[in-house]
Length: 217
Ligand SMILES: C[S@@+](CC[C@H](N)C(=O)[O-])C[C@H]1O[C@@H](n2cnc3c(N)ncnc32)[C@H](O)[C@@H]1O
Image 1 (tube, rainbow, N blue to C red):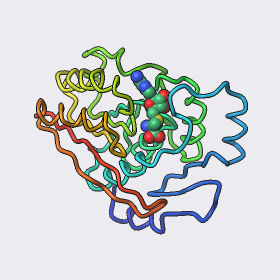
Image 2 (tube, rainbow, N blue to C red; image 1 turned 90 degrees about the vertical axis):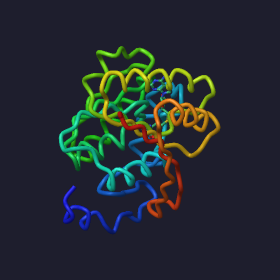
Image 3 (cartoon, helix red, strand yellow; image 1 turned 60 degrees about the vertical axis):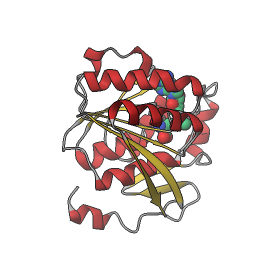
Image 4 (cartoon, helix red, strand yellow; image 1 turned 90 degrees about the horizontal axis):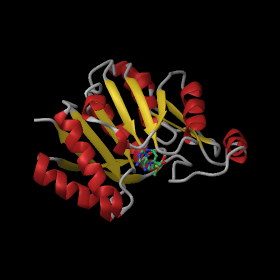
């Protein structure tokens, strides 16, 4: 991102109760009429991909300091509405694929890609179904709020190991700090020399989250 782009991104929040705007990305809140209309058309969501999650904004903020190379191929795991991937596609020309086990998130993801004037690819699949060869297509993997059940820790740890073997350069996972996330962090620090940082944002909400950083060594 150019310095001039960064300056243009501030002020960062729009004063609407229907959407937030941060780092040049607009996200509709659950009470927005278009979101309510889309939700009425659906049966419901299976695993929490049903709103804007704050960790995704903290991860965007982290990425402004430590961005991927321009035009990188990025896999957004458990993408939900896809906002962090949209951020990377818009500002860093990233080629983003968002995957989510819940196919119903796609409508919301495509709506946000459209209002933010960029495109990302969506695939309805779980991260557990990736083979090493599939993962070798990506330079980096990002995820936000994806390690929320104890049963997710081992499959995510295996997935991370596979991605590193496949040559993925960096894996970033943002989280509010739930116990399963810390279990995953412990395993990744021990096996992959991972680091964990805290990151605080003040807009569009004042919030502090954690980012697990795994670099391929
Ligand atoms: C708390 S939401 C976070 C969504 C998004 N990352 C964000 O920050 O806005 C967790 C997401 O992970 C997805 N998910 C859960 N288990 C998954 C799995 N095994 N593979 C892929 N996605 C999964 C859910 O469907 C949901 O969209």
